[in-house]
Image 1 (cartoon, one colour):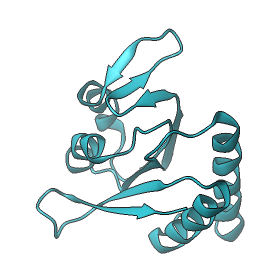
Image 2 (cartoon, helix red, strand yellow):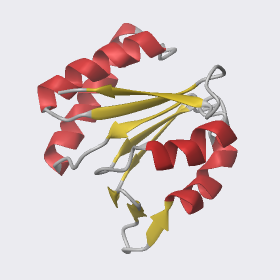
Image 3 (cartoon, one colour):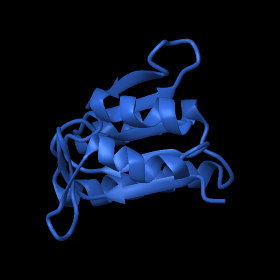
Image 4 (cartoon, one colour):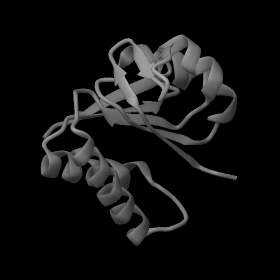
Length: 138
């Protein structure tokens, strides 16, 4: 079983684009992804895509642990290195799991290093909306 899904794409606050320039809005993306996200983390390397509209379509319905990615525009060169650095840090410490507190700590460090704000939405049984949001500031 795969525990993580990483999508790298062009996007904006309304949805993402495929290689062929097809636009996929958040409710359509949720329909595609939700059946496959239970107990997993979703990482999105896409400009301005990770925000409330996406989280409310995915987390409460899918059972996804978290949705993580920049909440602002990011250069491709920065994104490629940011995610490589994050995964290196995470898997150097533990190849078998990604604990929330460790993930947030490493996300905070990479956010500062690459000067990109990162949104971290995670499943919550306590909140009515079904998720919480942290913004890891640069």
